[in-house]
Length: 335
Image 1: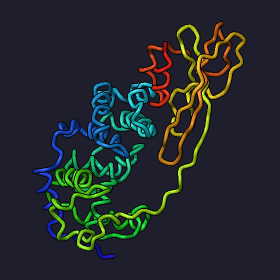
Image 2: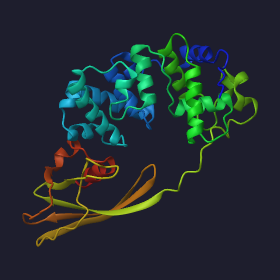
Image 3: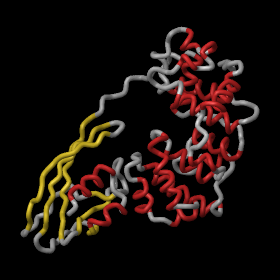
Image 4: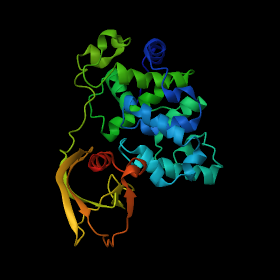
C-alpha cells in the first residue's frame, strides 16, 4: 500500500504551533523522561485541563522514579484518586519498580526497552522518544488519528485494525527531518484545539487546501467509528460501618477499582447498631454504568468483623486510595 506524504503538512503544523500551540504546560518545562512519561500516561483518555493539577501533585509527591518505586501502591492510588482509569497508576508504579531493578533507575532511551514497561505502548513510547531524546518516532493518539483521518479523507472506521495500520503509516510518513519534538507537540495541539471532534475550526485552519475532508465537506462525517455497544448497568450495595469515629474498608481486587479501598458490599450482622442513612449514587465508566446503593450503619458496640480490612479515621479519608465517588460520599457522611 502506497502512502503519500502531504506536501508541507508538517511544516504548516509546526508553523501553526509556533503561534497558536501550547507552550507553558508544566511537563514542557523539563526534558526529564520521568516527567514526560507521567504526563503522557495521565493524558491517556483524560483532558489536559484535568491533568495539570494531578500532574503537579504527583510530581511533588514522587519527585523521582526511585521515590515512585519505593512508595506503596496505596500511596500511588491515593494521588490518582479522581483521575480514573486506575490501571494507569498501577502500571506506572509497576514500571518504576522494573526500571529500578533492571536499569538502575534510569528511564530507557530506546523503543524496545520502553515498550516492555507496563502501560507504555507504541504511541506513548513515540512521544517520550520525540520529546526527550529527539528521536523520529510516530505517535497515534486520538487527536492525531482525527487530524490524519480528515486530512487524508479516511472514511473507514478509525477503530478498525486496517484503518489503524494505515494511520500509523501516515503518521510515520509525515514525520519531519528535524524539530521532531516540536512537530509531535504541534500535531497533538492541532487536534486538541483546532481540528476538534465536533465543529472543527476550519475557517482559521492553515491546511484546508490539502484537507480532503474539508474540500469534500466531510469534516462532520470524519473520523468515523464503528458503533459502540450500549453501556450496560451494573448494580451493587455498599455497607458503610462506623465505630468510634472510624470507618471500615476492604481492598478491592477486581474491576476498574482494583487495588482501591471500598466499603464492603456484604452486610455484616451486628447486634448493637443504628442505621444512620440509606441512599444511592451512580458512576459512569467507558463501557458501563455502576449504580450503587449504600447503607450507613453506626456500630454501638465493638463489631466482630471477619472480613480482611482496616478501620480508618474519618479525617484520614483524603489520604487513602479510594475511588472518587466513594471518597466524595464518605466525606459527605463524615461527622
